[in-house]
Image (cartoon, rainbow, N blue to C red; front, side, top):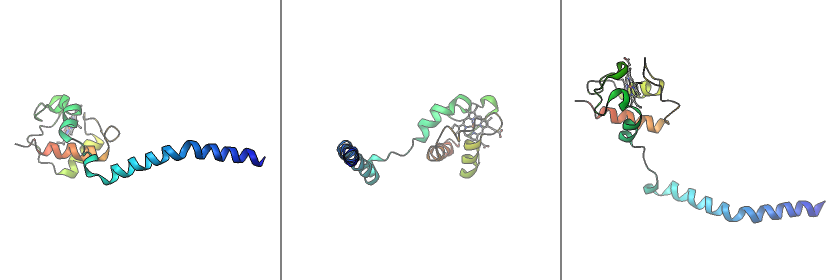
Length: 113
Ligand code: HEC
């Protein structure tokens, strides 16, 4: 009885001590090295998910999409529209994470003429 428990513990420590260490080191490296944390690329997300309706320069207007080169919407409202959708616009709250939504919202502001 006792020896069985001993073996389980022994095998557990054998299999896990090495990989655990590696994992911890890698996580620590990502958390502390600013070069390893990549901010989401708003332009890349826009080209991937938004050009179908808005066009690369924001003026396409397909499916009733607003002309983003004329939009004066504040950033919070853009984030809200992108997250929850509006009329025919897809809600992106389940497709993009909050950082990605913020990045693409910020990018749409650069389309203003
Ligand atoms: C299926 C088509 C479609 C797609 C895809 C789409 N949009 Fe839209 N978008 C719309 C429509 C339609 C509206 C206007 C809704 C309205 O009339 O109130 C809109 C409005 C907006 C607005 C508000 C503009 C304003 O001044 O009111 C923003 C910002 C916006 N879209 C950004 C995005 C971003 C960023 C993406 C990609 C993540 C995206 N859209 C993808 C159709 C789309």
